[in-house]
Image (tube, rainbow, N blue to C red):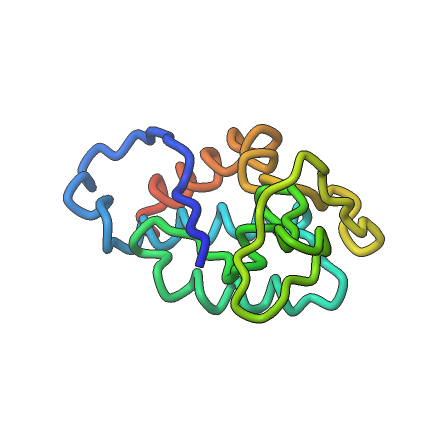
Length: 144
């Protein structure tokens, strides 16, 4: 499995410092905010990868992790074509470890026009201030 850890951010946590660490409701909520914010950046054709990623991630949201199951999760995230070293095919023979090429993956963007490699970083580049504001509102309201 490929795991992505949350981007580094800070919040005004006056009075809740003890409730904001790994394993906390706040950490779980932050991970959910980040995962939900990345959905439109995920490669998507059938929705199966998104669903499996949510199932795996939801179990460790309180640990600050997002999980994109693989090995295809890693391959999709990196955005690089991997091939069978002997045949050069993207379809590897059983038991063969693929090797990295210098060719970039092409993503189907019909369902998600923003789909592509490194979706968490690209989503954070676009949405981190929104995620921080959402989280700060939850903290201010005492919801986490």
